[in-house]
Amino acid sequence: MENISKHISFKEATHSNTAIARKIKNVPDADTIVRMKLVAEKCFEPVRVWYGKPIKINSFYRSEKLNVAIGGAKKSQHVKGEAIDLTAGSVEENKKLYDWMTKNIDFDQLIWEYGGRWIHVSYKINGNRNMKFNIN
Image (cartoon, rainbow, N blue to C red; front, top):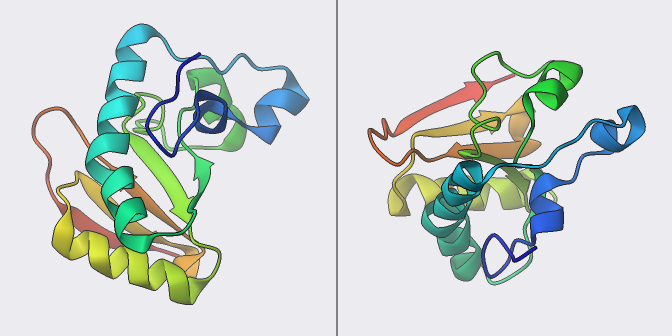
């Protein structure tokens, strides 16, 4: 399978330890892959280029069955391929990413999650709300 973007492989975008352990199929359809490529292009790649160092993807695509298994939100944008959870490895580095993303990219939601352990960013083809908030 081709890469989602320059810095995100298909394998990385669909990887889940829970899916592996529970034998859950976690393969997006063609329309979902289009949305995944868009969120990678509009949200991930700009911050990755600016940061100049690897950024880990904690979660990108989740099948509905996987989303239920991990206790994800019922209307999670991960299921649609519209959201990425990412980390630079520390709260301090994540804060740099979050602050830059706030000022430099268009997004639907930008969420500072669990004290900055990771950042959730989503992007929709139409109607991005540029919502920012914290979840603890």
